[in-house]
Image 1 (cartoon, one colour):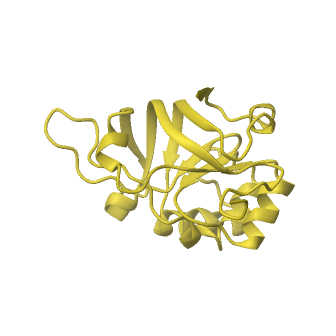
Image 2 (spheres, one colour):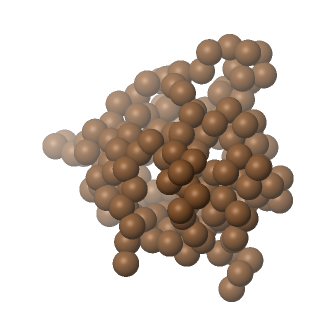
Image 3 (spheres, helix red, strand yellow):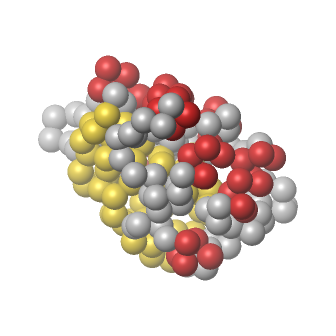
Amino acid sequence: MYKDIITPLTKEKVAQLKAGDNLFITGTIYTARDAAHKRIYEAILKEEKIPFSLEDNILYYMGPSPARPGSVIGSAGPTTASRMDKYTPTLLNKGLGGMIGKGKRGKEVIRSIIQNKAVYLVAIGGAGALLSKCIKKSKVIAYGDLGTEAIHELYVEKLPVIVAIDSKGNNLYENR
């Protein structure tokens, strides 16, 4: 059974999620991979403005492939989340509500998820073509020079994800 979540991902919504919950996300989310994370992180450290508000938003660790004619976006599968771990606590401290990726997270990130009452979600790796069908709108909003690693603002409908680490630290990767 799936729970429907409409963005923004508020603390109240996050508090109701438990590790293992299956979700359908509808609303605006943002993409960011390694290079974009580095730029956001550096801007935060320099107290510069970042391209969008992190508050109650979701970052999808995804770099889309080019869209085929008539499509909104190309393949849109998740990338390995641990590559973003060195930047994640800083982004969570700025209000990031959740992240979508694949794979385990480090101890510092898990502590920060708990401290900031956030959530880590996973999408099914290898299912990028299917996941792309949930993306109804896509536009590059920052760092266009990074190509596929640019930040995209996406509008998604019923994007399927699983709660891997909830706001209390319950962790699917450890609780098997």
